[in-house]
Structure formats: structure tokens, C-alpha cells
Length: 179
Image (tube, rainbow, N blue to C red; front, side, top):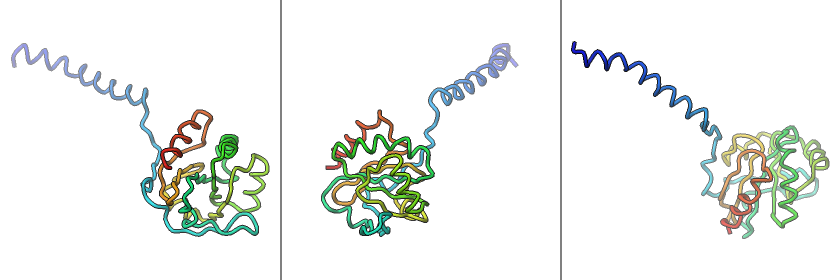
């Protein structure tokens, strides 16, 4: 073995260590996004019909989203702490004229209505999704999640997690793009 080969072999473990250190550091600086994005974005809402959480209101159906109006669908639960965190932003969006429909996931109507009485009620309609079947069908992996739906009933955007004040401009921009 030549002297040059020996020198290269001596430095090889250090080079390998530096490469591994660089990969680990890059993962710590910019962690991988573990969010599960819906494959339904760009597709029509799947067919569904949910009973209303509010007594006397008509069911919330997928067909009712093809009415020419851009709106939000917000999936929430009264048991969900981040859902309470986003309520002020949803109430503000409603004040700005945004139509918001809610889907109460794995909840009871009484608990959903008590939650909205406590934190504010931004919803025009609320569908009762007791088994999360609609939530799963539109590609939601958790609550809260919010979807922008255009006037033809096509999902145009997804927001994963609670809507924070800094997210408001992006939500409004996505709604404008969906018109």
C-alpha cells in the first residue's frame, strides 16, 4: 500500500463523520414537515350528507357547496384545545364576510354548541360528523383543519392546524384565488 493511500484512509473516518454531522445538523435546523396534506386539494368534495348540529337546520351536504360562493370548511371538535385557540380568527373572518361551515368531528351536538357558546360561533352551518367519515374522506388527518372550497365545490386549499393571526392573509389570499 502506498503512502498516499494510507493518508487517504486515515482521513476517511473524519470525512464520513463530517458528512453525517452535516446531515443531522440540517435536519435540526430545518425539520421535516410531518403534516399530512390532503390529496383532495384540486378535486371536488366527496359526496356526503351530515345532519346539522343545530336543531331545525337542513343537513350539510356536499352538493350545497356548489352554490357559486367561495367558503371555508373548518373541521373542529369541542374536545380540541387548538380549535379553541383558532376561534377568534374564525370569528374575525366571519366579520369580514367569509362564509364558514363547520364539521364537528367525533362530538355531540350539545358539546359542540356549548363550545361555540363559550368561544364564539363563526359558522353558517355545522355538520355532525360523529364517525369522522367526512373528515377522512376529504383527506383531513386531524383537527383543526380548514379547507377553501370554491363555488363549484372543489377544494382549492388546505390549512393544517389552528389558524393563527399570522395566517389570516394567506387564508384570505387563498379564498381570493378560489373565486
